[in-house]
Image (tube, rainbow, N blue to C red; front, top):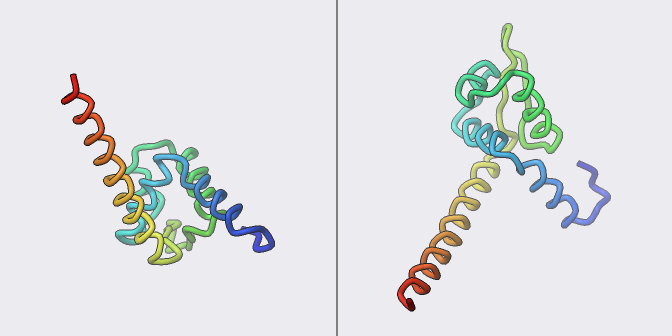
Length: 111
């Protein structure tokens, strides 16, 4: 990622790189431990070419790195902060969904 841009632009690019469910799932798995591409493919259930494209997006954004181990390419997250970020996103989502649920219950009660 270029460093000569405003932080909000870099953040927008980061969020864009996270904008697909397969990429989120890849990160969730890699937070647990590094994995070879073959295991990621089996766990996620996507075609190899699709997985490769998603891994490339995550690699370009600096969230994952790859290295060759014997005959396999293995991926890992670049920083433990990736796991913290996913946990924060989960908390925000739970909070948002809770507020939405409360609002719906309030509307139903007014009927």
